[in-house]
Length: 235
Image (tube, rainbow, N blue to C red; front, side, top):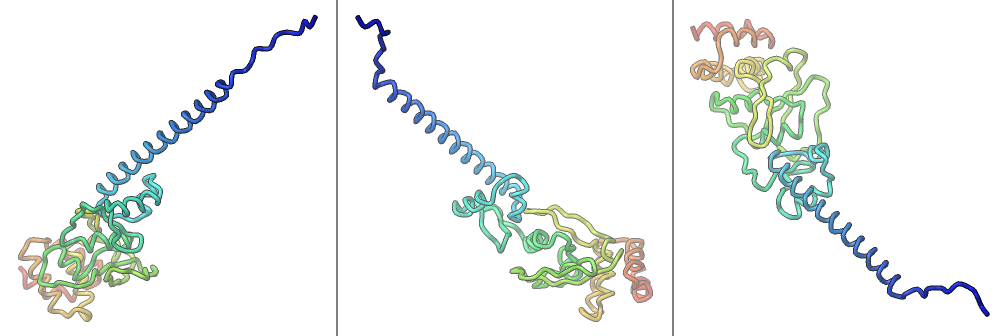
């Protein structure tokens, strides 16, 4: 008599159930991944809205892959302003939008000369280009889609009088009114002495600076003797 142990027959449904469970688990994981991607994409869109105007690297630093930026553009939540420069769809900007874009493009740039006069509401200058100051010896950015002009300042002539203004879309660095007037006297051969004198007169009339502010800026720009006769006319 055969006394070998009886073997329980394997049900064909057992393998089917295991395969189904694995498939359900896989689908569940895919759903979780998709939900996480949707959540992260929404977070990326919210971050872009807070930034207003931004560079692609700003999103990457915040933890959002470039692929998410491409998706936001395809969904028209973000629009591309130029190479590597973007704005959220809800960002309308204002008259200073070109300054914000310039600040994003050239982080070391400081709005100066006639562009700074226009920003501070001094005089009647309305430049079609954004003037930025860079430290002397800096390489001038190339391939810019924005209408930018550059000048180079050395030492304290570059660092003195920098103000930071938070605007819609970002922060812009601009020279103070007094420093801007002194710069206009320094560059009087480029713009004309009449522009510098108008800026001095209108800025003083609008109480944009004090005599002490002007004297300090003139000393830094080495135009004290040139400005002195015009300063005397104000008092």
